[in-house]
Image (cartoon, rainbow, N blue to C red):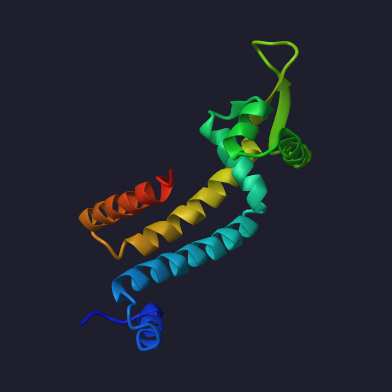
Length: 164
């Protein structure tokens, strides 16, 4: 038998109380929950080490994904946030020197947001730490197992997303 984790104890505790409990489903859901919590806690710690709050990292991340320059309205859409909340985020990032507002090269009425070198460095430091932990965790699986896990989770997510 493989090594046991705390989810095995959780399932063992609930099986006598819920006779219809599927231990594999309960185990998978609980492990996804615990893994998600672990990644969230690590993300908060690594972001703090990089000197970033989560909302700052998310904004820098969206900006990097757009090539380091974007209109505030595009960032708001990417972040799923109201434009005024993104304005506040950008104000704080600009004060810290992580982004700068510049006139749009295509429309004089518009302002774009550009990532600064310090902003890219802060984002990269956070990404390096986050990536290292993800690599550490998933090194428990072979490349084929990681691909299979990703495919299985995709099937579950497609079911979750298909609520219509």
